[in-house]
Structure formats: structure tokens, C-alpha cells
Length: 423
Image (cartoon, rainbow, N blue to C red; front, top):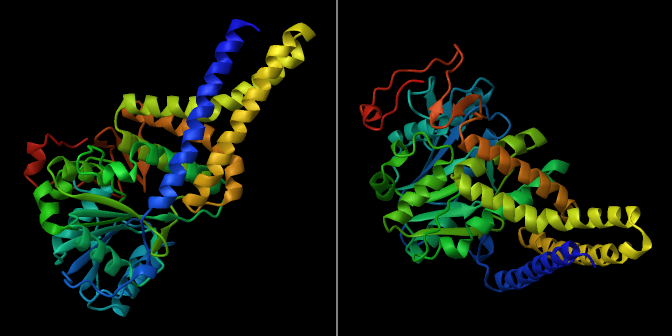
């Protein structure tokens, strides 16, 4: 057997051993996994500090009503909902006006007409919401989230108080309806888990820090001590950066999965998935080194076995009988590694409540995810721009906006201190 085929087979053996170890990891996770769910509801926590739920909405006519209604009908005794209408051009303002009449006293709406100089859109919207919020705890949520239980706030606050948590992030259950969502979402979620495993995030001794902006509950005093959204005004993934700041100065950070509390549908089309996950990888992995490593791991352990199988089939077709024995061994080894890979993926999809049938498309999702990581590398290098919710960003700058949404000079003197200037 040629030497290069022997090296190839050794590499496949190492890859197979890694996938086998994933079976052990999933078994351990199933035994020790903690879920925040309404079935464990024991009533309100003994202490019920007031909570302000803060939502930024820009052109969210499809999601905003279900988001706001599901929050306004929570059973927590003392809370308010503050929604920032951030320069929406669709029916979002009309829907919010109607809901404000319906939930008078519970729902407050803040309107942002123009983007402040030196700020990214969502960060500015959240800053405006915090400015009018009255709660001792702040719950930041995304407009595409829908609470499926009236107990979400009560369960989250009880968890935070019981665990002595300063900054709690309840992870979403992802809704996937289209073909591309089912193919892409679980793979991209797995990449994030690889980098930010909940066990490491929840360990005060670990430097790993993670939060998901879909649901973040933190003490107001912690938020203010970190510098609030002022500190992360030009960060695409402000949730991650706030989590890093919090853990870096010793605050107790916690992430926990939910079951039956809330869901979110992040993206509905292939284009949205590509743009959205490229932005997430860019904002969360931050450095070119991490993105390169993530792409290398995905290439080696997920894509290489399939490339190896295809190469071995081609080798069998073009070589003579004497040389084909080595290619047959490689084909068998590749197929065995792929079967082991798929068995792990099937169990992982069940663990994260994704459709088991979607696991059959894992290799397609892995290839697309690899492309998104490469796309994020260009963004890190500043050679590509990020457009989100109608606003374009390049690096830590806001690109010149169209005339209908001109940039407003900042009234905040801290802008000069942080070196933020008009683009």
C-alpha cells in the first residue's frame, strides 16, 4: 500500500476516535444536563425585584406582536416591557401603538428616529430603552423571541436568585421550518457549543464567557458597573462582549438551556442564514486565529471523511487491480468513519431538539457553515461589510446611511473619549 494511503488511513483513525469520544461526551451531557422548564415551577421566588424587559425592534412586523404579547402576559408580579422602535419602515410602529393601548401601564414604547453618531443600531436602541426602564433587574430580549410559557420571567429570576447569579442567559430553542434552517442551524449551534460549552461558561475559574442576546437577565447595578451599552456601542455581538466584561471583573455568569419556556426563529431563508451566522461568527469568535481554527476543525473532522470517501471511489475507478486494494481499504475506512460521525450527529440533534431527519444533511450544513466562517474572516480583516436590519457596518464603523435616515450628531461627550467619529 502506498505510503500516502497509510498516512491517510491513520488520519481517518484519529478522526474516528475523536467522534467516538463525542459519544461519551453526549452521554455525560444527557446525565448532567440541567434545563429550565415550567414543569419544575415552584411559584414565585421569595424575593420579587422589579424587572424591566427590554426589546429592540427594527422592521419586525412579523414577530413583534407575538413577542410583546407573550412577555406582557407573564405571571411575574412586578415587571414592565419597554420596546424601542428603531427606525422601522414597516408596520412595526402601528402594531406597537395598538399593543400599547391594550397593555396600558405594562408596555412602554420608545421611538428612535435617527441613529446616533458612533453607535451600532441595536446597541443604541437598547441604550434608549434602559434610559426609561425602572427595574432593578434588566431582561434583554430579541424581537423574534416568543415565550411559550407564562412562567419564563419567574423561572429565570428564581434561577438567578437561587444560584447567586449576576448575569443569566437562558438559551433559546430554535424553531426551524424551512429546509435550509434545518440543515444549517444545528451545525452552526454546534460550532458555538464547541467554543463556549456551558460547563466552562458556568465555571468561575474558566475564562470562557458567553451570553445569548435572545434572553439575558442581569442586575441593573452590574449593567451600570460594566458601562452598559456605552461600552459596547460599536460591537456587532454586544451580548458576547458584555458577558466577557462581566466575567472578566468577577461577576457570576451563567447560561442554561430551556425547555418549554421560549422559542426563536432566527432566520427563514438561506440568504438570511448566511448573513446572520457570518455576523455571529464574526462577532463571537472575534479573531482571525479563532476563525481559522474553527474552520480547520470543521474541515478535518466533518468534511474530510466525505472527501476521503469520494477520493477513494475515484481511485478505485482509475487505478488497476494491483493498486486498487489500498483504495478499497481507504473506502471502507472512510465509510466507517462517516457512519460513526452520523451516529454522533443523530444523538446530538436529539439532544438539542432538532429534527433527527435533518442529521442526514449534516455534511451539506457543515460545508455551508465552513463558508460562513470564511466569510467572517473577511469581515474580521475589514475587507467585507456587514449589513443588518438595513444598516451597514464595516469594522467598528457605521457606513454612511441613506438620506432617509441621516446620522444625528452625538450629544454624548463620551464619544470623543472613546475615539468615535462620524464615518
